[in-house]
Length: 350
Length: 52
Image (cartoon, rainbow over all chains, first blue to last red; front, side):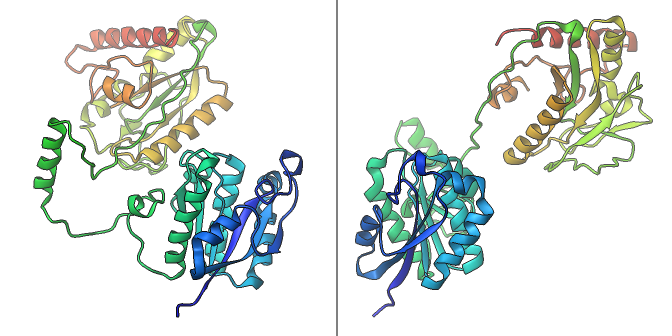
């Protein structure tokens, strides 16, 4: 007879039946046995597992004192010697979703036990924790409570028994960005042609490569007045001061450089270079204004056509950039520009 | 690079002087190249003032 898996279930104050938003600041607590949705979890586990305790915490308490909440919850659950922590499902509730991800991550790291969470794939907790925690997609509607808990139970039992875990689409969890080698019946060229033929016939087919999703962004309001505008120059063409002091990468960038240009009338070939593995930099190196137009912007500044040229150029080598790194670099640059009072940006791209 | 810019959500994009010289054109004599750059930048500034 296989050992019965000991399960602790995490809930927020609402699903633990403590109360709604008025009780969102209650601190971490533990009770033996099941509460609320835990009944459906127990039913799904059957005789293979037992919900030995339920831990819960108010969403606001967890969000405001995350470290403290985690320490306390881990301390409370440890004596129950769980093999598995199941958290949620949180559906589309952001604070609850983050709490589920965070407590699972902590239990995995500190107690070395199996963990599984449930929430909607668009929950911010999913984007934060899907790489480190198995997260079952609950969808946004609470109507999916029971099937979500059934999937969590099945996956959780496998994880607790250290069994092999199948693909996300088969086991019901969100892709974690992990690749496994496997043998395919047909070589890639044949699979590609099969997919193309299916596409031309308008038949269904499943691509083996997930294209990156771009979230898009809200366009900034138009600049009303150029004469008072502070314009910054940004490039993904890899401009660096001679010698590349910040050592930015010529490709697959993880960082950017901030180049001071106060008092610089023009980018001269002896003082600036382009480092970039995606294009021939010789032409830009002979006259770096071809990459970042400092000379022209200075003229326009002196003529009063624009208010001011920003005192730094931000630059990265944007060849083969991973979308998540590029997104982060963009956000960091935008943050610096905003704090510096820049009102418009010209980004030159290679 | 305009299709790439649009794909990733950049809504104000204008065609540049080329991949290897976005704000230049090495085929032109220096004074003409500066004029080219100036006109390109003025167009970029105008684009910043447009509703999208």
